[in-house]
Length: 110
Picture 1 (cartoon, rainbow, N blue to C red):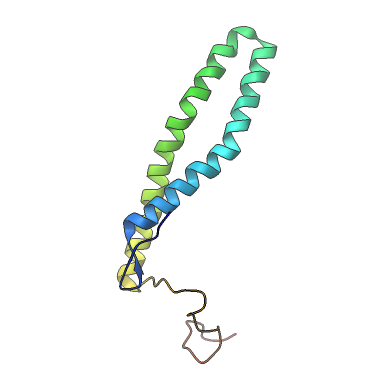
Picture 2 (picture 1 turned 135 degrees about the vertical axis):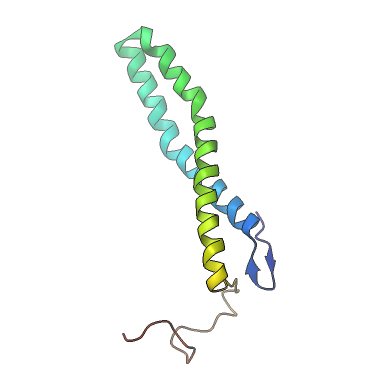
């Protein structure tokens, strides 16, 4: 995955892709096995409820996709609004100055 920048600033589309993809993968890893376990448990206890459990497994990718759009959109909107006040700079780890090396900070006191 690429993070595209313009003049050292992260683009909103790149941030959205990063957040949405991370959410889909992370939520799938967490909720997929839980939904599968719930489906198997329902199927063992009441075989007639197995259809409902299979339906929830089929709807899981759709629900996660919609949630990633909403969550990613809200996060990117917040980052975009923050960027209007202060730029979000993307720096290479080797190029970043060490904390406390004379650069101004936002802290008033430690």
